[in-house]
Image 1: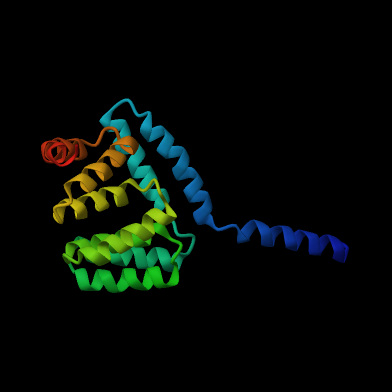
Image 2: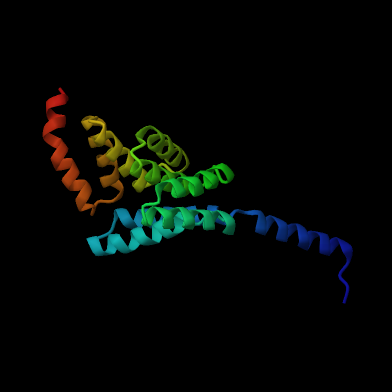
Length: 186
């Protein structure tokens, strides 16, 4: 049976709207729910499970091609092929500049290459797109600590701990920096 042309146009328009909503937006909404759960996690094990789910959501760009570039960049990072990782991740951020996780992983590649300025730039892009990206905040803290900016590192680690209350490495970093920062601050 043929539907009248008007009904077909309305149905086509509805499908266009439905499929034009980026899946990355849904992933970010889901990540927001998970961040709330992370803050309320009652154990380190529960927090670790929730964090894995958050990272899975943050890794969804909404494009199979961009997800592939992210995977290739991460794979290159895993085997310490930093120039290759930077190439893949730069292509990713060039083609998907609104994808926060692409910037975050690019920052990791730059940091591994001891390119702290570009790493900080990529981290700033990440945080501009996703202010609750605890990995990027942790990266900011690590860069500041590496450069001897103890007070800035301490502040960034404090922000990470607000989002990830069960992060033992961040707690240790705060303890390590506390004496130096207390001597700096009035």
